[in-house]
Length: 244
Image 1: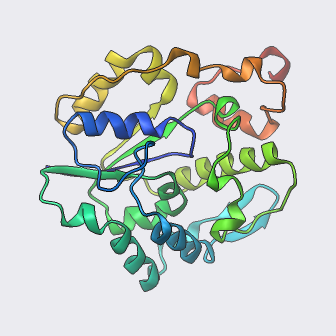
Image 2: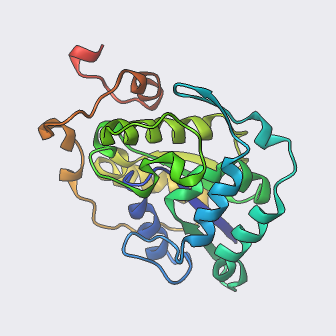
């Protein structure tokens, strides 16, 4: 019996994990959209804004998240998250969870509210991830201070880095696994075996599209930034020769 959540920036392929869990008999809440996001999202969005005001912006591409790990959690945040998760938390399902990308923005307080649940951190090559837009592209919409830019690709890139940083800066939960979208596409059987060990249940196999990987190679706009390089190296993504 477990409770789980999937974190990761929007367009990281988190829908494939949500759909895999659903197909494996895990209750992922109702209603959902086609991406497997739990709805309605407004309480989660507001929870992001509540927590965002406690994050110290240091300028450039740096934030200090340390206060979030020790200060009392704002009661308004707790109320909003419990409201957002009301269907999941009240369910009698043996195994249950939720997915919505904005969970990543409040990850430090989610792990404090739910320290014993299972966390899947879903990542994708940023060069593919920022080709498409997502609500979290502009961090300021969620109460997070940052330098504003009219360059939408740069804004998405900053959001990708920020969401990597907030996860890395948080204490790792006891039940945590990191999964790359590309591994789910090209090595699904091996990846599902890891997830079966993590969850302790058989994992269903869903259709994965190979053409969803490497789309940046035919993209004519900016999709690579110097500040991607440290995280890409950690995640095992190879750089093109001109970026090495």
